[in-house]
Length: 228
Image (cartoon, rainbow, N blue to C red):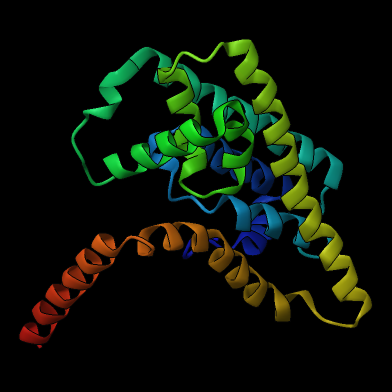
């Protein structure tokens, strides 16, 4: 979830349609905009399914919600593809900024090189990579028809799979007598950990990266203690 944003409270205040459309916008941004790489697509899709099942938190048809998220995900990836196609290889030499890191592009490039067209499907389930994979596909001039097929498959599996997992798990926990408010945050925490685990493993498996990370951490700690 996004820190400081309570989807359940927002739905009660602004209405269920507003909540669903906000989530759709988040899904679109994470799928196709460079600035969307930090957005929590997995956890927010799961949360919507979980809250819809509860009924009292978010009154909305689960099938309609899945359809909206599926469309948002597909349009988002297509936007990223078109951006990559237009910008071309220049994206690989773009300077780092607060919201843009070359390492994210390189990671997506490695993922795309390893899995080919299937990367568009698989990347849906890998945070950060799912934002940059369609851009890399556009830069590589993958045929749009081919891209669209993988985009549709990946978008459906991700949007439907994660949302419906939240919905049906919510049903199981409710039958067990557990309250949604008591279990939602721990479950989201587990999803976030599972989401960042692959990226963390990739970062730490290389000795040079581990040494660089540790050196940076020590430097930051020294700065903090000196201020104290």
